[in-house]
Image (cartoon, rainbow, N blue to C red; front, side):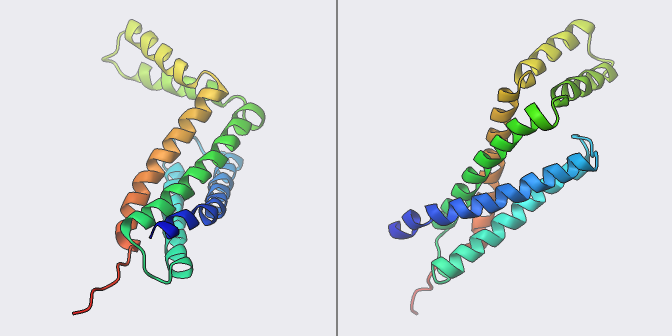
Amino acid sequence: MEENQKSSTQPAMMYGLILGLVLILFSLLMFLIDVDQESPLMYISYLLMIVVLFLIMVNFRDKQLGGIASYGTMFGVGFKTILFASILTAIFTYVFVTLINPGLIDEILMNAEGKMMENEDLTDEQIEQALGFTESFVANPVAITIWSFALNLIVGAVFSLIISIFVKREESSPA
């Protein structure tokens, strides 16, 4: 089993590249058709992540492991894949925020301010404080890149944990 875990790194890099490219292409498509960052359509990226992770894990189990794989092995493949995909999408995020859509940070801050202004329970002081907090997290491309990487890694790890339940296939013990 340990041999399977070691041998999953290189395929996971390739799979991570595939998943990362799928997520990047989806992100570019949403940008090109001018879909708002807060649109429910943006959640399709999570569905894409789930489907691609599932297909990758099944493919690895069947092609590399002969159809038998433990929960831990499957999670390892999923996590390594999402790690490499998250690195790739983080690099893209930095390029996107600095070169392709440099106004994104201002857009995020304006949307946050608009939502806070709509909330009648917040005082002007609370709004200013919340905006300052928001700005400290998204005020520069590096911060957005780090948050993007962390979010993709966490969400992908959770998806990998869940998908592994369905993809694992233990050897049946003789009766």
